[in-house]
Length: 109
Image (cartoon, rainbow, N blue to C red; front, side, top):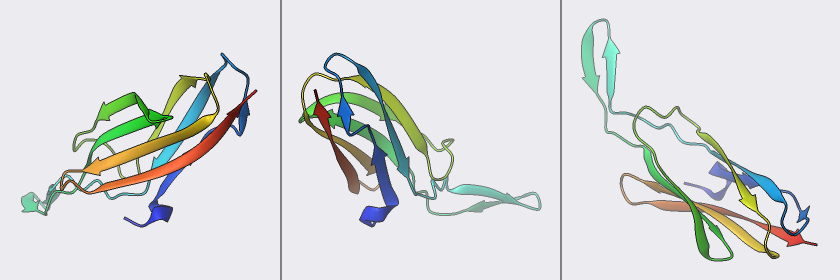
C-alpha cells in the first residue's frame, strides 16, 4: 500500500498527564473473499487487514485483531495518556503479512 493510504492524526501539543485521542484511517478494500450474486456464491481472493498495532516512543500501547466483517477503509480511534514528547506509530498488517504504517509526533508540555 502506498504511504497516502494510511493516515494518523493526534494533537501537535498535549499537556503532561492529559489523555488525548489518536485517530487513524486505512484506505483498504477489506475483501472478505465471499460475495453473493443473484443467489450464487462468488469467491474472490480474501484480502483484509488482520492486525493493528500502535506504538508510543517504541512501546506497544494498543493492539487490535480484525476479521472479515470490518468495513472497507476502516477508521480506528483510541486514547493515550501523554507521558513524554515523541512519536506515535500505527502499523497495519494484512493477512498476507504485508506491513504498512503511519507516524506522527506529539510535543508534551
